Length: 345
Image (cartoon, rainbow, N blue to C red):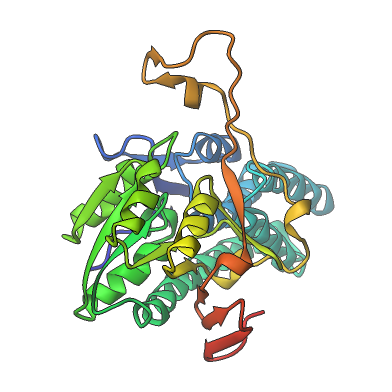
């Protein structure tokens, strides 16, 4: 059970191929990005989304920048590549992987001394980031599977699966690994308003893999917890600061409810999602367009002139997190202990 790559580089054509997630589940379409501008559009339209996948996109955005800039003089060429790459890093402000990957590739490029070498190093480093993501997700799955019951129901929010990574996934990677290990796991996927990433994407992934999944309205989660129908909650993350987990809006609500009902609340994320330099009050929460809330397809659901708040993410205090599942071990924020190879933070 190994999902196809969500995002990958086509060396033959010098382009980045990615699954258009806005079309799922009705149709499956692959987008070819041959320019930085097209990639930024894909990022902002959520054709590609999910923190680890955005990291890979950012890395290959630098590759596209190295191939797009036509300047022949090396130092001017490099400055233009850096400037163009930074536009990719700034395409979405909250998920840290995007800027992290751009910075990592640019740092590697500083050792190059020719345009040809810059392009070669960019492709190599972006490929390493993609490979590391796949390895990290499988390691996260192995650590996280041990936390899930032998038989039980897991609630998840938004999409932290193969579509949000290169393949396998973070939160859904844990579920895939548990099922692979013989555990009888079923999933309740919150629809995740307003763009329904849980209903459209998580349900699509799990149905494809024959993992039992039921979709619920976001607001039904607390009721089902009270009914004893949920054994644990597992979500991904777009950024983890020293004091909070930033994830899709609605995550905080599920964490509060899980805590109130004595249900474990797990966060699965690679080390690249950790932000050691900031606290939650320093992070910009992306506010998205009114129409995402005000319309359902072509139909208006809110009277004209009524304002909308549409934050894309919220911050969950680490005090509400039972465990952070990473590729190097399990962190228990409240106890400050880690099970696994080594301490991550």
